[in-house]
Amino acid sequence: MKSANIKGYHELSSEEVAYINELKQLAVMVGEKVDEVYNREDSDKRWASIARTDLQTGFMALIRAIAKPETF
Image 1 (cartoon, one colour):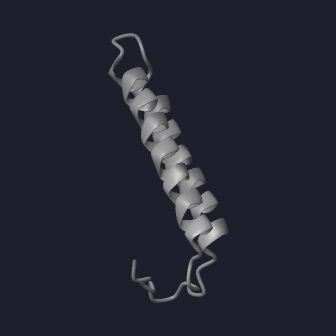
Image 2 (tube, rainbow, N blue to C red; image 1 turned 90 degrees about the vertical axis):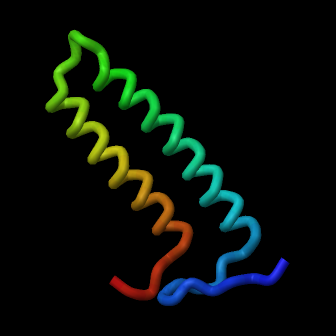
């Protein structure tokens, strides 16, 4: 498989790519749980929305910690 470079990132190893993909899969699962809570009739939509945003930010930070972007 030909490796591809993403502008502003170092070349990711296959282990890094696999780990990032694992985190992305986990993020999807967490997102589904957030949706379940949000869609409950008795849930506070505001807090569920805050949770969604904060969890997205957290997963993004974890992925950036591995990918180590060289740019902003």
